[in-house]
Image (tube, rainbow, N blue to C red):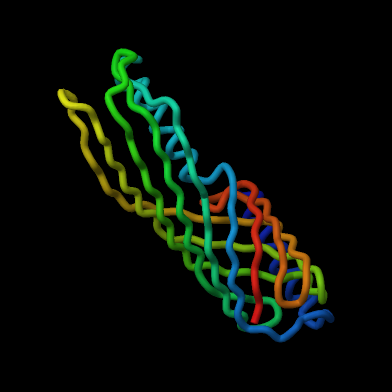
Length: 200
């Protein structure tokens, strides 16, 4: 985590030094959509599964899980050629079967929705290529519901927590107004993510 934050700081200093770089197209708005892997909510789900097994001494467990996401939508308004401010919204969902003493008693459904104010630092800007770093921090809203068979006890739960995204390295390529991108980082959008964005 400290290494990631240091890389973002270095990117910011680099961005200041290249603010006069050619290739900036004077667009102010940017909208993107992405899909990632190994997000914070994925780790939360894995931790819940392990906690259930340990807490019940192996009597209860989850299996046949299906995790969708993280699917993210983001918007940035460019204050200048280097700095963009905006927000990232992320959705993820998990469904999994519930077992007690190896008997399937129903299904658990978890939904994860995150909203994170964010900043993007464009430290390399060319007409058809760019590199950047991104930082977002905000809240995650978790909703859990258990649909169980007759004779068993289910339940539901909602909670709110802190969430974040640190993308140390982002690479985008395409036309000046529509580009595909990939990012490496850590957080709710994932360790690795890919998507497409439009600038206007």
